[in-house]
Length: 390
Image (cartoon, rainbow, N blue to C red; front, side, top):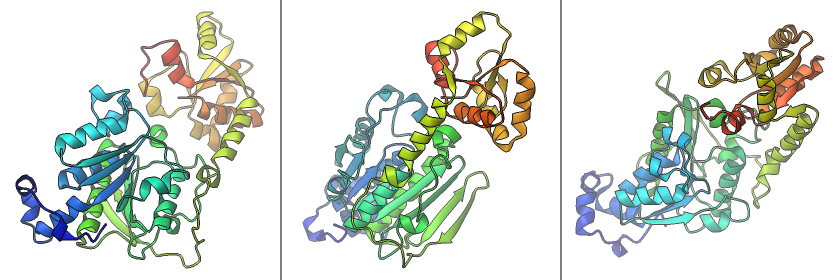
């Protein structure tokens, strides 16, 4: 309801006091605050991006906010997901977010959708809301959000982050482009690391999420120029912003229905290939590795293929660091060959995926090895709890 009947909306005495700094802005005023009160916004995700944008939408007086998330709060979230607190660890994120929203604005209606968004439920969940804000971190869900917005003709306020860089735009608004104009085809699975693999500067989430909140409020107010047709790129290390023009692709496929987005993004095939790769490599548990280390045997080489900064966080005793990137480039293969020299090769990483990939490359080069299932995280959980989880 982006064009509500303002005569039907009343501001209370408390509203005038709470939103006084909005009301004295000519671009907002009484009518604008009424529009905010009448608006409904659905936020997909209550994580890094969702945290600041939800807080600011609630504080601004958006009358109805829907939250979609199925995860629980983890200690590793607290570095950037500022809507959550330590007391909410291991509890549902949407419950934590609702609690914080109502602390800021007890008059906001908060709808909770404690579920994984899918092609089966997206249209039903999206339908009651004016604007959809995408705070997700994976390609299948981003395509799903986009296509559902196109089918329902709803604006899609988009943001994404990685390491020190972020981007934001508005899709499917006033005949502007949609997500498929930016990414006609998904990248190969695994090409773009997740934040859990590549890291992210916590403050970056606040900047990009706040930009998404700003664009959402501008759409509600009908004020200013939105980012529709413009992709805003932000580099926090350089403290620089730049823009790319986006235009609708006249030959893009027509979206007629929601599809299997995991399949569209090649996830099942990638998982099958990874499983096949792992099946071709011998594995050992962290408890078996501990027994080997305690045996004082010297007939092995323990290879750590994580990045150097990860190695500084935590190590398994006696491990030798040769990052996967070096093995992929070929330079690390000969290093490993020189280390092995007739000894048994055992490799590990954070969770087991990168070490399996490294061993597959080494196997093609004639170097056999064994992978440590679960990596150093399993070592921390099952063998040595003093090793930090990250």
